[in-house]
Image (cartoon, rainbow, N blue to C red; front, side):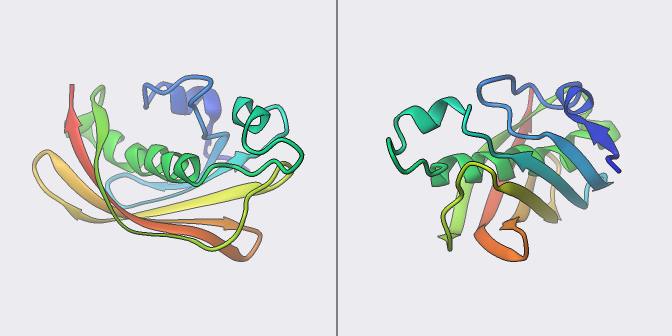
Length: 143
């Protein structure tokens, strides 16, 4: 059962197709935690060139999906409602496995530090039980 649909997520974050990567939210604690999903399909525009004959989701787009996920618990806080969470930095990025059409990415982000207009999140992406990516992200909240 989903807590938020993709359409409801679009009411929170400004991203739109073709750079919108959240299909549903399953768990959400504002300011603290999120679990959401991205269904990876062969129709994704990036598969046309990455790579012909062996489609692989670009790692930077997995990180972008985690950044979008991480912005949701921040932007659901009353002080940040209606604002934008910009990606301010990345640390300790690791990719562990390819993501291909047919995979379902489970995106988990924990907000580990929150200041006046910034936050740090630890994100992990999974396909099934296998971790495919992890990253520490800094978010800057602005208009």
